[in-house]
Length: 168
Image (cartoon, rainbow, N blue to C red; front, top):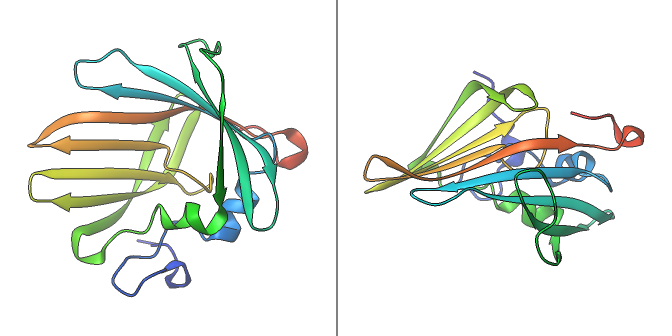
């Protein structure tokens, strides 16, 4: 199994992250648009869109927008700002509570080889799927509580402007 490189380790007591800050920067050019579906137990699905509107060598600005299932805006967008290192830090998980395995995952826009990070706690578990060819956020996140699925976030679309490397 090919795990992420040791050079991606941010803390000695954590596993290496799937991507370096530099890989995330290259994978999130201006215009990258991600659509997410969020499901909570017993709730109607929620949808949101993230568009990278400004990027430089250190950070990015993202437009965050709630949408309906078809992608139509609901309300006003907000702006988020993150450094590339902050985005990498989100994926840093404690080594003593985390396993990593390679899996293949079908998404609405294709199949991808992923690293699945499973983070355990006494009565809960978090699962993060990172598509190896889509540097950045997980393409699927699940929260399990007492053996039941409590919440899921699924990337339902990912588009990168053609000048930045095509659509995927």
